[in-house]
Image (tube, rainbow, N blue to C red):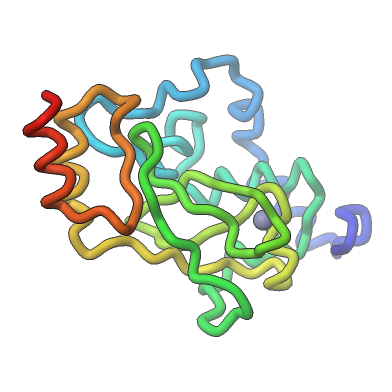
Length: 176
Ligand SMILES: [Zn+2]
C-alpha cells in the first residue's frame, strides 16, 4: 500500500475534507456508549456517536490516520463480489452487529451496519482485497433476532449464525 505522502493532491484534498471531524476520534467518551438499550447497535450508531455521518466516513477518518490510501479509495467503491475471501459474516456480540475480517491471515473485527452491508478492516485495510470493501452477509431474520436479544441485559445479547430465532426465544424463556 502506498504511503499518504505519495497520494496525488486531489486525493489529499479529499482526505482533508474527510478529516474535518477527526477531532471526534480522540474525544474521550465511554467506548461502548453507542450501544443502545433498546436494540442492537451497528456501525452507523458508533459513527454518529463519534461525530461522523456514517460508517464509511468514520472508517475514512481512521484510515487517514493510518495513511492507507488504497483502502480510503476502496471506501467509495461497491464491494467486490468475487473477492478471494468473503463475504464477511455478521454476528452479534454484546449488543453490537460485528464481523470478522474475511482474510484468514488477519484477526481483525469491526462493528458493521445492516443499512450499508460492507466491511473495511481497520487492522489490515482489506489489503488482500486490494483495499476494496468486502460485502457483509446478514441473516434474513435480523429484525426478529434483534427483538429477541433486546429483551436481555446487554452482556447476554450475543448471536452466531448457527442459532435460530427459536433458540433465542427458548433461551429467553428459560432465563429471563
Ligand atoms: Zn483484516
